Image (cartoon, rainbow, N blue to C red; front, side):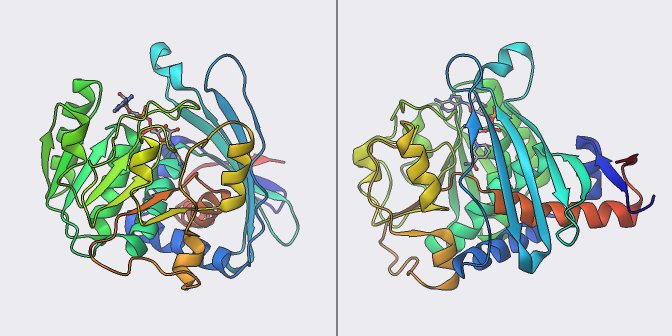
Length: 325
Ligand SMILES: NC(=O)c1ccc[n+]([C@@H]2O[C@H](COP(=O)([O-])OP(=O)(O)OC[C@H]3O[C@@H](n4cnc5c(N)ncnc54)[C@H](O)[C@@H]3O)[C@@H](O)[C@H]2O)c1
């Protein structure tokens, strides 16, 4: 390689680098700390929407000086892809040298997206959930259902996971994977309410819809519980969200952008963004009784917190394919 080469990392390469969820949570928390101090550059993501329905392809650039990280993710979400046997989320990430601007790596972004989204849930939960949270409800037992369970299991004394999905085979697969990898009891449930009521933490990770299906009703989420809305407000009735004492997000200007294009038409006022919670500008959980929620939209800083570590470890371990620029 010379300084005009770039490293290509396939999805298998990225996975084989072997970053841990615990390490990713720490890196994502650092990125939120920097954001909370106003030390990151991250314009709201522009997107295009090919075809019908809820398809998107988003450009997500960010610069985190403290992490020496600059780059952009170009990520697609096509909800109907499963009918073609293709994944919902696909895409690439370009990492640049912040000193010269040269691209230094192009890597598949699927694994990073799966892991950093869950890490952002965990970073928010560290501020918003009860530290003794032991029962987790998962609605949508796909990739995010699994990684969110993994991330919350790093920070909380989890014992049991109540798992719901519209496809029973997804619950079976989730139960197999989670019980093989972690010391957790997985309880498959047949109704969405059983994965909400009685849980200390709830993660909804079904499809993102402009018009929410709003299945979760007021009165379902217990006092003292925390919820992470990975699929935006799609799962929650407005009255159920309004029961939360602190409704947070990862970035207010991005939320406002989504509102301007038709999403989030009936959500509670925002208490804080996750960066403000991490640096203590706004309070997180203050009492064991509060109901708290975060609706993280997914930020470019989440990706750019993780990508340099993938690159550095890949170079060290001689993983990937060098290409001429
Ligand atoms: N906020 C973020 O940063 C972020 C990042 C990545 C993905 N996402 C979103 O997270 C969601 C899940 O992504 P994924 O990669 O896990 O997808 P996935 O296809 O792997 O899993 C989705 C699961 O939801 C199930 N499902 C569909 N409708 C449901 C319903 N009404 N109730 C319960 N389960 C239902 C499907 O059967 C599937 O098992 C998507 O909406 C995706 O856009 C958000």
